[in-house]
Length: 138
Image (cartoon, rainbow, N blue to C red; front, side):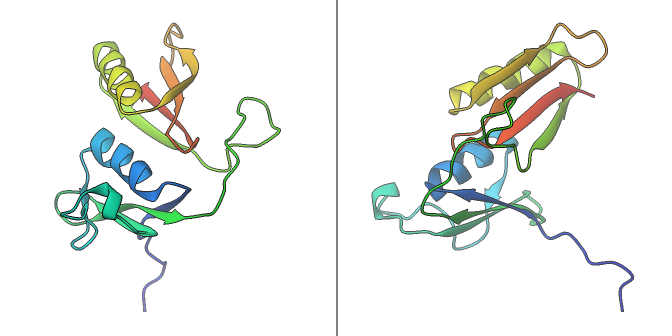
């Protein structure tokens, strides 16, 4: 018997499951679990309500599950708290800027710009479904 359970993946709720999965797939360089790929007939033929993303070597990373509605986090206001957030790291300020630009181009919105912090420059962004995440030099 194992001493501890093993974390399989983090699950994100989303109204638009495919849009959410595509955002994270593109941002993190993930791949779909076999059978979860975009249908050959395109996204319009997609009725997925659960998608799994893995690292290229097959290790699970994220799953996205369908919900009927989901209020967006209002962070930094606590009216609707973050409930969860992901931390992503980069090696330097140039990569921080490049990854910020990529995330925004993929549909992220900026919640906080703290790139002028000498101790921990970072961006807080929200994915297309409103889940906050941080990208920082670390």
